[in-house]
Length: 93
Image 1 (cartoon, rainbow, N blue to C red):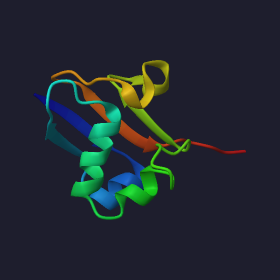
Image 2 (cartoon, rainbow, N blue to C red):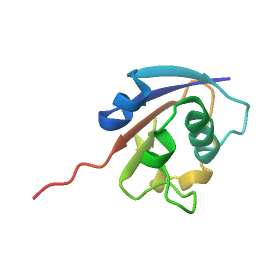
Image 3 (tube, rainbow, N blue to C red):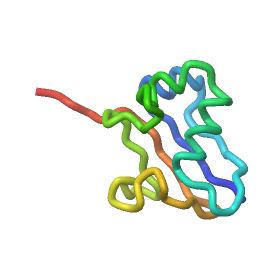
């Protein structure tokens, strides 16, 4: 099955692309997708993950425009045709 991955901001700069289609196995989770992306793009892991391997609080991952934290977090299973957007959270004062 395939999921579309869309990157924004510094993550897009690291991947040097805005969007890719990722072939994944049925039952692949957000965490497993992130692992696959980290293997594909050098330098991405430092942006996305903490030293303990968790997705950084400053990273927003949405699946079909729904924040993964409002689903099952890193354990959210992806479905064929899902669109996964990965960006840094917008903060300001």
